[in-house]
Amino acid sequence: MNTHFFFNSLPVKYRALYRDFYTYQNLVAIRAASIIFLLLNVIIRAVYLAFPASLTKAQNFPEFNTSNWVFICITPIFLIISNVLIADYKKRKKGTQLMAFVVFLFSLYIITCGMYSSFIATSDPGDALILYLIALCLISAICVFEYYETIILIIVIELFFTALLLYSQTSPTQMLYNQLTSLILLSAFYLTSRYFFTFKGNSFNQVIQIKEKNEQIEKANGFKNQVLGMVAHDLRNPIAAVESIAMIMELDEINEDTRDNLEMVKASCAKARSIIDDLLEAARNDNNNVMVTERTELNQLLKTAVQSWKTQLKADVLFTSSVNPVYALINKEKFYRVIDNLVSNAVKFSKDNERIDIRLSKIANEIVIEVQDYGMGIPEAILPEIFTRFTKAGRTGTRGEKSTGLGLSIVRQIVESHNGTINVESNEGKGSIFVVKLPAG
Image 1: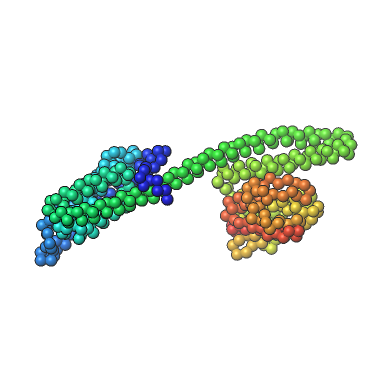
Image 2 (image 1 turned 60 degrees about the horizontal axis):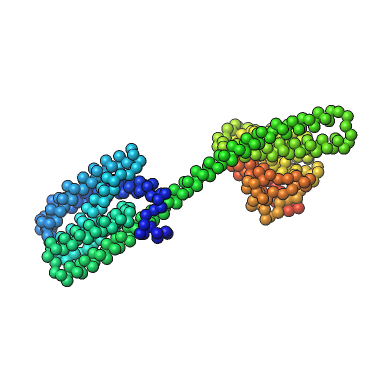
């Protein structure tokens, strides 16, 4: 804990905000304390009226009786004022000097009430300081003061204590002992008050800093997504133009070397489009928390997709299902991208024409989709990192394909947005199996 605040204020940057915050908290505490203190005195008055005088008239009864009526009359005033000031604060959203002054007066009122009650109990308050001590502890705990306010309050309390000692005609020796006792209590009051100020101040300081950091992160994230989306979108046109030119050139009579070069250009354009799609998908997932789903039969969806993968990826993709029909609430476009990424990833780390298995099953109320390859596998050291965005765990494929570090992070993000889960099991050199689980729809 930062002990700097024991004899100082918060940094200037947060001081006004914190003062407004604790002013409102002080007013709420005054309202609660006023209600409790009023009820306590009303109960005492009821006891006086309900029981015989022989039981209620203890030592110094007239003083107790008078002070009880004073407390019953004055406390409601603080209750009313605190309610009015709380309503005013809610309109202003800002503390005022009047609010701080009322908090100061109430604190002085409660402490002097405890002090006076100790004097009523005995002319030697050193023998009966429980009420005085309780009042000091209560105020130090529920009210927050700046260090100079605490010092002023202590001085006023000490002056009032001295006046009561003089009024009670205490002997010089007893007065000295009582003053020393009071000074010890007031020192403890100061330290306790500053402790709570420090504790609450540090907590408030941390909350404000976290809020500021979150705002900065949100702004940076929004700007990043905006730039990411704009750049990725604007890259589509030149890549499409290059790909179109390559396709047009293929229509002419060209030699084998030129055809191979055009195939490389087209493959590079396809890879660039894939990267752009990943970037756009990452930006869309960050900016859009709404997932539009529809009840979809998964067997038909996966069968249709498998035919496309066999043609596009030139891979041996085998689909098997142990349940038909089976329905889930999914966003077709996004969920297709999940399976597409997983199959593309499997092909990337498998040899040419190596089999890729896609299995569909249902366990209880969960739909299970497994995508398994028998290729390179994933080293155990990087398994925990493969779903992290822009992960450094990305590896070069069997044909030299580069990784963007986005594909699997997008997969997990989409699956979790469907209230599903994704896990992976892998043995290096034997292949990997990705398991997607979705709630049945």
